[in-house]
Image 1 (cartoon, rainbow, N blue to C red):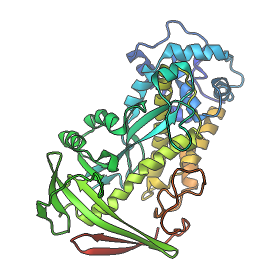
Image 2: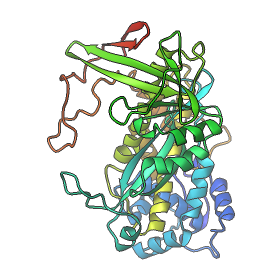
Image 3: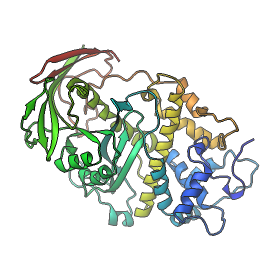
Image 4: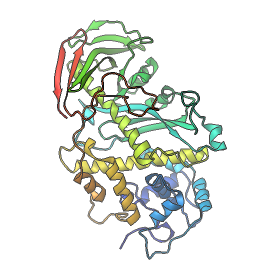
Length: 453
């Protein structure tokens, strides 16, 4: 016995994830964007939205195969059998607006009671960009270009640049923007930063160390912690006042900032790596935000890289997006972001049910495969009278939690001969579980701590 919507709306579901995006939410979004069907066909607008979200769960399948999984658990019900052309026409008829509105409704930090979601009263987020490949069609090439040059001669497919802000503690999407790769990450970042909520501490890499971006952040009553270059092209940061913790006050982009210069050495039983970091932050109070604590917090910026891995590898499997038109690409990327967001919300709800469990320990792969199974079986589509906040997906996640996060000790070193990154430095064993990290703040006291993840 399955409980789904009636009539032609029955295939419109995402299994248990439907409770994250219920029928009423989809209908409201469709009404607001004026995309409700004029007459009920085999593919009503609500069903097409769920089809697009299901297409992200089953990224390796065509929409007809996705449809077969949506109706697999509806045995005994009269369901339609649309053609490939019907699916294409339905997606085109719907357009990207409902998916944009749905993402805007769902984006934001997932509520969590554990992990470094907030740090000393500030919501810790990170900003960074990545690229996605889209179908090599004439319509897409008119909007999106291919990457030129490089040792491999450039990309074979047009590319889209995606820039997001993510909450580090739960890896949920705060906001996102995308477009052609002809514009850089900092160009897209202007729109994102202008919408940044107050009370956020934003972590960023060296690409975002620009004075005009810093001003946008401070105008939003938020804070920035960004790594800066130390060699050629490094910003000029005059020492105005030396702080007791070894950092110093300076001016950057017309804003008062605090600069932390530190040497970081990581030693394991197989070798040692070292480097000099320079961090710029708008956190000026040395008592509330000591330099050593800021240095440790900056490591959380890698959470956004892990989130991109989950989107591009776990969900997409490195595949090219299906859509062959720019409007379709807009629709599909927003559907991808919505699907990722509701998976993250379900995972966070599960870890919230166990006191002291860090959201980092929830396995994204387990949640993704569990969600796929629930779609095929059409289970949990409509909630019972007693709400189960954990659900089947959450229970599977909690039954197989990941171990505590290991210390990252070997960035950008891979074993593939065709990689554009060359192995550099000593051969640090990635399997080393115990490491010692030394934070030596230049012009300040040294701190050595043993980390045992």
